[in-house]
Image 1 (tube, rainbow, N blue to C red):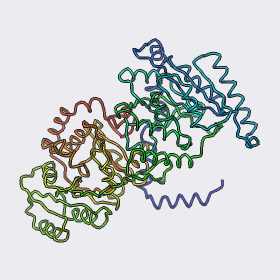
Image 2 (spheres, helix red, strand yellow):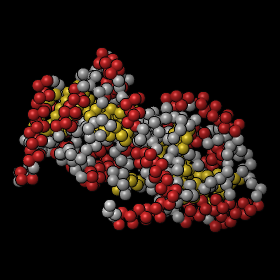
Image 3 (cartoon, rainbow, N blue to C red):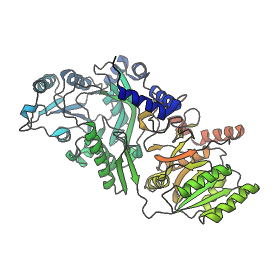
Image 4 (tube, helix red, strand yellow):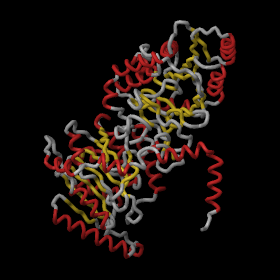
Length: 605
């Protein structure tokens, strides 16, 4: 056995850097979630059985649109090609058109010698296979290109050939489930959506095993600006696909991301975008498929270019940049005019914690136009009062306000908001400490965006594991925190801890909001005595169609404190919340896929 000294050294350095807790964190998040159990779960619980498929074939809808499935083909291995075509032919919904545009026989002038005999054979076989299926099914249409124009332009040729009211995009070596089109058309009975997308998984090369499901959230604009989470099998109204100009050749490699961004920009309203929480697409894992798929580095570069073009079209003052993970991007929003930010701190912690928070705000941050309002319930602690006076004397923009009538965290926050001078409010608990200099600017830049309601960051424990980043409703009771225990720098399910993400709620311990919106929803409800007031506040913003966002790189330390509410208060608040928000508790959190369990580990089947 040969030992690779470089790999051994790399392993030793990894152990030194991560430590035991870091290694355990990595193991935990690689084996948790849907990964290991997924294949059996899919076949037992998710895959439509023969009885269900037979019933679907007999079903007729009031609205039965023609769906054109477009596929740019290039020297596809016969097994993959047949599997793809047959996955369409076997659909339980019959009103479809399959458009195949083939660039296999086209070779650029001067490149004849670069095409191997293997590739030439595949090009001939590709045409033969397609012609065979065309003879058996007149719903299949085929165009053999004289010149290979690339994925984007070949897709546009297919769009021009499409006769359907909807267009769906399928890769030449992947497959759709037999109930894919039926499931889509069933959703269209509810509303004729302009843009639909579904969950996907990966399929073994021989098509027998399924892994790595991407159970997606409902439409999440901030996540889409972090990476192309929609990716495979978008279903688009043909009128929309043509209105946005189809695919753009200048983004070849990132053409899918560009197309999806432009479609989502141009829907009449986000309510016209529908997520179907069911796996309808199998993405084949293989190393043998011939093709012109660009290298990952080129895809990464072109996708970032597409994201930058999107920001420019939307007239958003922001810059997109690469991260250390291929396919994951960071958007940094500018803060035009540097508006005044009122930071409202509820004085519930120790002097030590308060001192850390204030020092981080004044000595670490790059964003300086803020005032700090410390709201205290008229403490008689002489040491604390002395500390307050000292801080006020040191900093002209620190103001300590005492009020003995403030009997809850909601009352303190609301009182602070009533005297705040800023256009934007940042509510902080006193046990926080800002970690990174860009944190305030990163949060404010997102908060400034037109459809943003509330913004939070990522809270870390002292050992650099996530305390929380966003809240999910209706899981493990009324609500629970997301990504707890993930080590900083590690990656959890679908990179959601590393990306800007949309949620139904974020914690009021670190929450930024426009003063105008705060007033519009009436502040924090004084009917709650626990942190359910935070969730209630965010859900009121969601009712007004504003997004709630957790910013991945707005990092805070969450220093542990003992401040557990009384059981009576928890019980009363829970009962009230269940009455007020029974709709979301019943229907499920739109930003947490319903294929996940509501009891137990987050992101588990």
